[in-house]
Figure 1 (cartoon, helix red, strand yellow):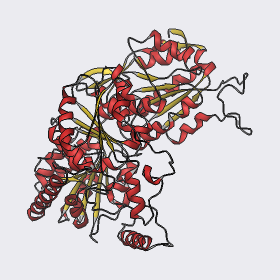
Figure 2: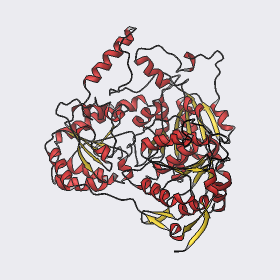
Figure 3: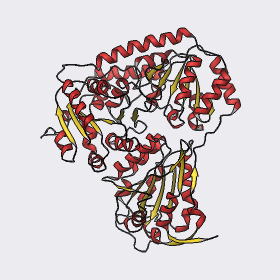
Figure 4: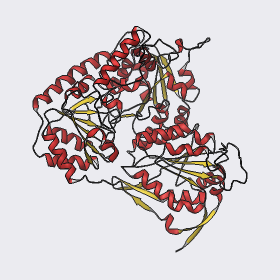
Length: 614
């Protein structure tokens, strides 16, 4: 076997370049690029290897390690996990800055490869700059923190270790059941050390995402359970995207006459004009979907981990005869809450389950009621998000103004905070794949960084990021990144004076306003922020508007712009669309006020409806 003497850093880069993947039958790089901030822990070795191969594996300069990794996570999500970005950082704070993004990827089951620098394997210079020492265990470094927020972790202390670890990390990231982040922690000295690598390690390898078939027995049992129900619903999750099962989902719903609800992460897996679309479900869902959830005797969950905002903390299903069928590529998710599990690819599972059901259909009266519910809810949303002369418009008013003037192909992006719920209600998808959010980890600051990654994955579409003033102040440097890389974004900043949605929760739980809105915090010299001028200083075009009509006109100008465009508008701190599902959150068992007593009463009522099971 022929050998190539290479440094560990060069061997890593060469192996990553050799990985390809089939997308729609065409061969593409599995790793389209690297986001990096270089420091003493990665610049001299890995940095040089990347520079020497920049034509085959381009490196994009980051401005904060967390932000650049969030952009990589969003890119992979938008590519439906078929391409994976790499994020490299130096040792110390550079690597720990990646941890939040790793948790986002872990929670949302999104692959990204982290290559942070680490301390010296030989330990001769210890303690090195930015090393965190553990007096009783010299083998622990700050990078051990990645173990809790990655699917795969290895510390590379010898150059030959990558022969085993790197292929394993890649296989895990492209496995639809195990997909998530991987971390190879690169000791600084090891990066520069050489080894005689087998030439085979660098030969092109073409990957394809597997579609595991479900077990025949599980399909049979699921079909039996469905045939015995009277009033079923479907819950469509993000896994429908990753399986590219949107068409199969729609066909299944029509053939078997079952209304389809969607999770926040599965939103836009079905268009609003589909005959069986019922809208979002759960804590951020609409009344149409949640009213049906409360009455249904069977939910068919497809590609969802059934998180608390989807299930209303498992209190949303009030029918005592409620049952659950769960189609999921991941055994762990498929078997939650006493479900009849179907473990397999969503596209294949829907086809096989439909075949097993044959000509069976759900009751037509149930379907007709779903249309009436949806019509009523749409009328409410249209009214609450329509044109207004209100001095301080609500989030819904702002989102509605953009929605009315957007193209069907425009992609809306949200993350943490109140905008997620308002956008998912108003932005009813006119085309598939037009709503992207990060709700698994609910990470503030994802909005702009994520929008950049989604734009990179969809260069021919307008990507619109809805961001509150709180998230904007947390991280905004990717406005600059979008400008210098010619990835135009449209960013709508809704300034409601702080963290208004948490202020809402604070009040709902019987507390007094404190430390959420800026006016209720310990700020003796409160000044307003001119978000438009701030964005302009980073090269974006921008404007401050003062009404919904001005917002609509500004958005039209933003659509015509060839550079990132930021529009700031002050919005109401207390006005929200109507909620319709329970969500369990901490509640004082010893109430101090009448408001606390009411909160405890509602908390206990919701807890009493929770479905038991693990």
